[in-house]
Length: 296
Image 1 (cartoon, one colour):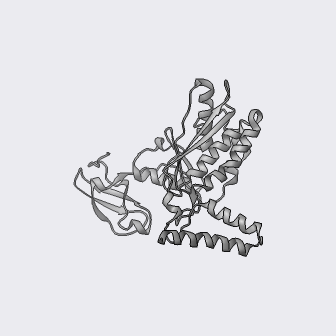
Image 2 (cartoon, rainbow, N blue to C red):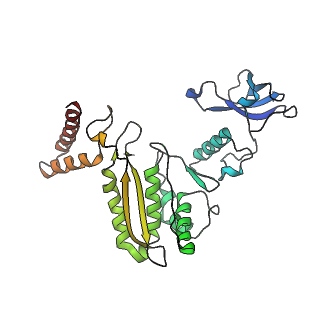
Image 3 (cartoon, rainbow, N blue to C red):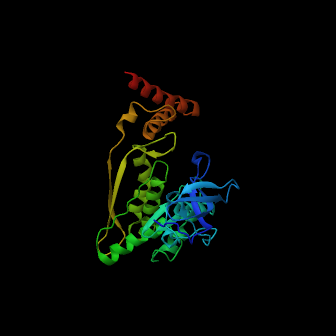
């Protein structure tokens, strides 16, 4: 880590927020102090009184970063946790939900629709463009994998991870949509089938939770094979693992079982009376069945 010295008087720093639950985890300030001993930090954001901390509590901060943040966090003057979070927050405030950290892409759920970000025009723009030429995007990673298949003739992997509600399902969907868009000329029927089948297949493993209305309650490995000598789709498969089977018979209050059970109940109701009231009653019946099963 970077240590403070006698020459760093009034140096801009980040320091821990004493009440992180009420706001940001780190606050901005200016630090004065010597070596490894106590330091005095004057807050910038709150206008409060100076606080006494240790040198280990503060992280150096740059005041030269652009207001909208930088596209690749590896180019930050100080690559520490507060600087990384601050950069992501700056970009998020400008609807720039993607940020590189070297070869890794960070994505923040915008909790709103950004249709232009995933348009067909955007898909065309990222084709054949190296990472870093255009703003950070999941399409850039998908295109790099597509180009590596063509140039190296080797399988490529994209790992999508994150906590519940982070946007893993949507990111995977965007990757498949991008690859399908650039394979339609050679394999339009297969691309259409893959994209159409995805919501149905997800219904068997996705459920509404307190944090996410479409939470994946399983792990998913999707394989896409390409035609020999090209990057167009040939066929695909999906393998699931660690399915949360207990959700069928028991789940927390305010949560639901897997979507597919409600789809079946609603379809059965629609085939009968065909009214919203009967569909709602059918969904309620699914819930009652789940509760009864859990109590049995």
